[in-house]
Amino acid sequence: MAEINRHSIVEADTYKTFAGLPPLVGLHTMQESTSKGLTVAESVARLKRLRWSLKRLHNIFVSRITAMPIYELKMAFSLHAHYCIEHAGAFAARIREMRQPPYGLEVSPDASLDLFFDEILSAPTVEALVLGLYNRAVPAVIRVLEHFLLDTNRLFDHPSYRVCRLTLVELQDVREYGDEAVRCLVTEQQRAALSEWLHLLDRALTAAGGIDGTASQDAATSGEAVVELQFSAVPYQYDPVPQRDERFHDPYNMGVNAEAMLFDPEIKPLPKTLMLYFKRMREIDVPEMMSSILAEERSKPWEYQRDMTRQLWDEARHAMMGEVGFVSLEVDWTKIPLNFTWSLGLNTMLTSKERHAVLYTIEQGLMPKKTGKEYEWEVAIATADPLAARIQDYDWADEVLHARIGREWLVPEIGSQVQALAFGDEAWSRTLADWAKWRDEGLTQHNNWWPDVYREACKHWGIEPDPHVLAYSKTYEETRADLKQVAS
Ligand SMILES: [Fe+2]
Ligand SMILES: [Fe+2]
Image (cartoon, rainbow, N blue to C red; front, side):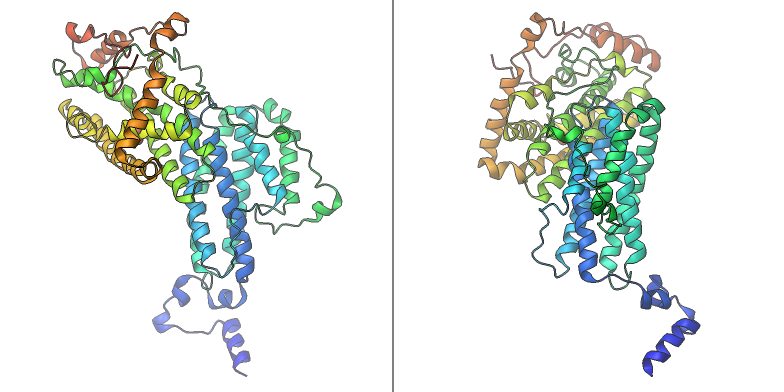
């Protein structure tokens, strides 16, 4: 009898709350809450596959930063990797709350789903990569998140509902950017040439029953699902050699020592603005290097991946801060050799532990008051350019976090802070001994680009170049970026 009454109230929509307040805190109507929902097992099954997909996407984004040449896409991949790993963690945390041990989080849920991501990871061109990522994978994840929000009971399964909803917000940003990336980078002919491969991706996803495994798998039994590997037929190998697009030139040039100028008391703050922006934008090489650590250290815990990816994204932000700075001064940054010798040397000469130690040594070295990030911020304040000050303010805050990430993850691995710094210092020196060799081999003449760029900025500032500043010519031949002598 009570059951019948409950239904009649729901169906007649006559249920009354106090003063007509929204029922069920606005999550559902009574009608929805009585009729909707997944079992815990169904919810967990979908969440696990979503998490796996975000983890795979994260890995593709970080792995392809180094050797994919386009600067703007390197930056976008850094952000999109950060989103994916953050949300993957939220999914894992929710799954662990749902009474489903063993968790099986590190086991692939479906071979066809992996094939789908393997093919994208192995995409041989930028066009194939952006189509795979932004035209296929990201929209497929979004569709499944939208289904989840429609299917689950928002009251009973609210924590899952919330995780999916927050993930959707950022993935919609990723899709929006990705649509633009495809529009800007892929011609109709290129898309047509890749149509067979895109069809292969669709078949792999169909065979997997979609990202969440709930779509019809009829195709899987009809023979459609026998998907021939194309790009992943040869297993993907991370490419550690950084590539840059055509706006970048003279990548071995280490002819202008920015740090030596910043710390030169004879030089006034204003021209140092340019060196601050140069140092920021040169940080393109940090995501290029950290990509190699993340690509290799895939078995480290999620917290490590999260922290390192956050740092990778911060470094991409620092590069873009430098770009903003140059644009604000009407300086054409493409005239400046933003060298890649740091990422190249670390990625090809050192182990991932040594690379991380070099990064930590540099960042820990930026912590002392007089010689590091605080000093850079003071220089920026002294330039009286509020943009420079704002950039350095946030850069400093980020670097304090990065030094902490190194202390938390690297120092315990090596033993002590002193040992970690010595280890990093030694490894870094090993990568720097080639200054003269690069010149002798004709890779660069280490041209002094400073006077031209300084003159251009002076035009913007409406001042005459200072002859003493114009004559600046200190290189990195003998002095490292931390102003220590290069070991011979
Ligand atoms: Fe940085
Ligand atoms: Fe940093």
